[in-house]
Length: 99
Image (cartoon, rainbow, N blue to C red):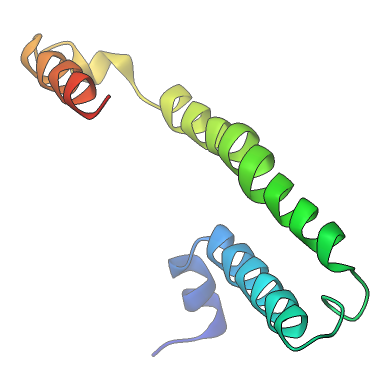
């Protein structure tokens, strides 16, 4: 059966953080749309500035970069020794096409 322990092991911790941040953003935007302060505290300009900083700088520069570094640093380079250059050529071609 499903227990709290097995569920916690199956769901990564960042999923909870993502859901919490989505709920906070949704609640704040909803309150602003109805003429109130975001989360009963923040003025519209402060809320927009904070949302832009979290989404623009923190999310795309710091957290995404940290996540990519974590994935890259956990790769075992020896596992690629027998693959040859074909996977790297396909990856490079994809990167050039996407931009």
